[in-house]
Structures are given as structure tokens and as C-alpha cells.
Amino acid sequence: MSLSDMSFIWMRRIDLWIGIPLLKLLSWFTPKAKSLYGDMRLPHHPRRVICTKFIGLGSVVLSLPLLKTLKESGVRVAFWSFPGQADLVKISGFADEVWVIEPTLKRFLITLWKSWRQSVRFKADAFLDLEPTANFTTLLARLSGTQMRIGFIAAKPWREQLYTHLVSLTPEHHMTENNLRMAHYLGFELPKKISPLPPIPKFPSYLTHPLPRQKKSTHLSKRVVININSSDLSWHRMWRESHWVELCKHLLEDPEIELVFPGVKSELPRVQSLMKKLNEPSRVFNLAGKSTLLQLLKLLQDSDLVISVDSGIMHLAAWAEVPLVGLFGPETPSLYAPRSAQSKVVWAKLPCSPCLSVAADKITRCKDNQCMQKITPNQVLWACESYLKPSKEKIAA
Image (cartoon, helix red, strand yellow):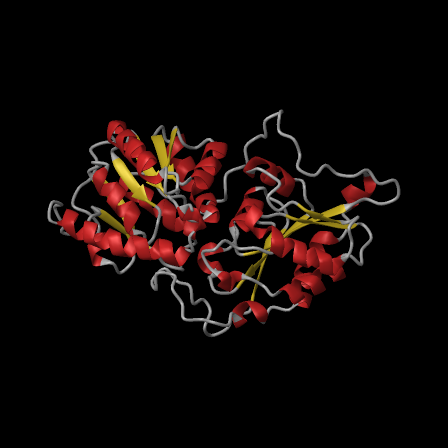
């Protein structure tokens, strides 16, 4: 069994049970900064910087403006992560080196040792920990030998004392801005305007499309990608199946619309269950577990609309600059809304929402995600309406 097959709860427990004792041990050998603002400054702009982000494909998308800022400033950037997130950074082209730790019982220690040696040889001027609460990445920062270590404040004293500089993570700033504020300590001027996501890179010529468009003689097809799945970080982000069925049936009333359901292989049964209830085999397609990350990006970019719960696919769609409707419940759009001018957020705004906050280590007692179930199919359909109207350019084509 791989660590990636474990529930997020177990990964958090391992990070807690093993991470805190190691942090306490290392704290005895680590000089403490007198100020949260840091006691040291680099004598020059950094030449080499290590960034880490292990959990959340969408969170890696939101780190791209920071990586772009570093790269365009002449900094040599190394990114340290798990395979999926590492692949995304490789596609972006904003990292000179990408180090991978494989989350499997057989490969974890081997790849950890190999990537740690790479971090020491890299001789970084600064280490930017983009994980808000993880103990594991704090250990990596300290063991890499980097003198300037920057992390987020997360009400974890044992973790925070191993950093030389701390950044407050607040919902007054979107996550892209919270990430960029780390660059302040490196001597870079922060942008005055909200930073958009960088353009998606050009796809290689050899890339095959996971689902080419079917030629239709009488109608212009409208491809709607629907992501019903969130990662195992939280089931609280899920919308009930009956809501998805009602929404999809409304969409399929338009004969020009075809629906595509992406996902990973483990999400295949959930997609199949929904498709059976739609009973539209000629206009409903299942791509769960059938596309690579690059193919998924290509699919999203070529779609007319993406409807998604808060997830990595939602942020990938924002990066692809495709019309997007995102469903939010236990997380706050103030921090994690899709960074795209062509996106709309549907959020019930219940008094208990958001309950998954960084301050609470994203732990909640909720057993009934009313924040998602209070969102009606009609609300989502209304948000989609303007995106599905045929444009004059499309009619002329």
C-alpha cells in the first residue's frame, strides 16, 4: 500500500506523531529568531531558492505566480514535492530543478534520501515552505542546511521556531498573494495589482487529445466538463449525487451539449454511478483514470465550460482560462477562489462556513456538509447560463 492510498487523516497523524518529536529535537540545535519578521537579510538578491508544496494540486497552481516572479528575476528555483504536484511544476517551466519524494512504502525513504542530498548540494540562499501547517516540510527546511527559512504562521510554536522569517496567512489576501508575500523577505517588490495566473504553456506537438471533438453536421457542440470529485483531503467538499443528476439532466435538455467527466482511477465507480442515472451514452463521456495531467489540461482548455467542486481540477481550469463555475462549502473563496476572470463561485455562506481553516489545521467536527447540500442545482445552472449562450463569433464560424 502507498502512502497516497492512506486517508489524509492518517497522513496528518504520522506528520503529528513523528514530526513534533523531531521538531523538538532539532529546536535544541537551531538558533531562535528574535523577531517573527526575522533577524537576518540577504546581502544580495537570492541566486538559489527551494520551494516546497506537497499536498494539493490546486495549491500548486496558486503558487505559480510566486514561482514565475522568482524565475523571471533570475533566481534558480528548485521545487520539492510528491509526483503529481512535481509534474505540474515541470509543465509550468518555472523550476530549474524538481525533486520528487515518492509516497510509497518501498520508495519513500530512498527518494527522501536522494532528494535531501540534492537539496544540500543545491546550496540555496532561501527555503520557502508553501505548506501552511505541515511539520514534514519544516523538517526538510531545517535539514536542507538553508540559513534563511520562510514559512507561514499556523499557531504551532514547535514548528514556527525553526523558521527565520514568518508570514501571516490571512483571508484578507488570496492564497496567491499570501505566497507572493514570502518574496518580500527576499528583496522583491510585491505587485500592486492582484497577480493573475501565468499563461498556460504551449502543448507539445506529440500530445494526443483524450477526447477529440466529434464533427456534427447540424449543430455546434458545447463541451461541458463536470468534475464531481474532490481529493481525499476532505469529503466535505462533495455535492450529493442527486444534485449532480438534476443539474446534468437540465444541461442535456440542450441538444448541443455533451458532458465529460474527468477524474483519477479511484473515482471511476462514482462517475459510473452518475452516468447510469443519466442514460445518455451518446453525449456523456467518462474519462476518469483515462488521461494524463497534460491531456487533462488540454481537455479543459478545449472545453466550453467547466463545473467543479473545490478541487485541483477547478484550479487547473482557471489556469487554462476556460469559463468556470466552482462550488464552495467548507473552504473560503477569500483564500481559494479560482484565479480567473472567467470564473464564478457558488457559495451558500452558512454561518458555520468555512469550517476547514488553516488556523484549525483544516480539521472539522462536521458530519453533515450542509454548506454544500444547500447549494441547489438551479443556482449552479443559473451561474452557467451566460457561459452557454452561443456567442456571435461562434455562430459566424
